Image (cartoon, rainbow, N blue to C red; front, side, top):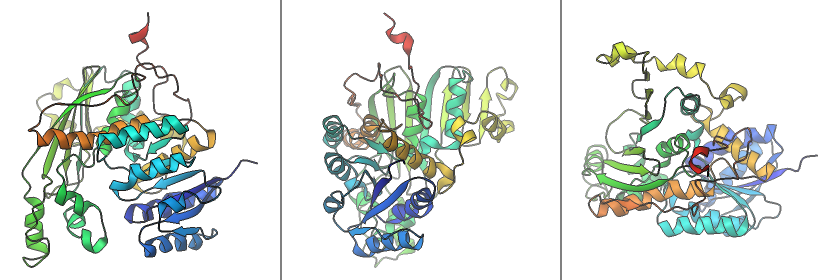
Length: 420
């Protein structure tokens, strides 16, 4: 009989509640999986997590308020970490050194040294840390990836992505809701949430698997949105009324890749806006634009060159026709349109098989480092900052890519580059 995988959930705020309720516990009903420990620094949240496990018909897990005690719980195989941004890498390293695999929620790193420490922990322990970047498993993102690998978009030259999400209420209610975003927006100015945009683009461009990120430059707008929102919604007597929010309202980062491609990331969370990840792919044979929901394919749509509005919405049937095998052959459910289910299932598959996860420790360190590096660049007026090669030159000759169901990497990337 297959050995059960025992998990600990560390962090039961909004994201932790969603993962536990809509993904992890339903997976326990289908997979040989158990949540045997839960942890949150707030005791009421930790107990609420345990109550939810029981409510769903499973044995009550052990309850902790200290992650250092949690990772010592007997029988654990892995930890899921949807805690505050600041603690992701710290908890992952501690878990790996305890012999556990770690899956951490998205967010950026606070220093490049932390990213190197994460890589070092992986290399010294053989344990993996997977970033739960669910957008890598988005239906449209994987369909575009599939189209590119089928040659339909030609060579990719430029990509864009954004986290356009009006979070003014969430941020300014941070004290009431015990939410970490508030303290970050007060004290930092950076690309604090880069991976929703960067993750799918990195897989498209084979980052750390035949290509790599080389440098970035970051630029910030003024910060007016949160101040005006507080004045209007909370009043001039609010404790936040006179706070000088450091985070710029629109934060732009330009990244250069080893193979010549450029990437533009935009963080836009403190002004009125519609939700969009702004996923844009420009290739020599065509382009995809999430905003507008359309493809422009060479020799197919050229008559609409001057009237792209006539193409808006044409992406739906094209994306469906080119759906990735993961979406065609697996029933995704749960939060964020099924992406949460798929990314967690990918991690569990890797733990069960004892192989590298599809978003591995090197990917995790690379994506998260953008936050710390963007903070450096913007503080110096947008000067280019080198992005470390966390693979130590393994990026162009990866030989550990595993052909599993949830793998989204090329098995033989850029083979022509090293035929000698």
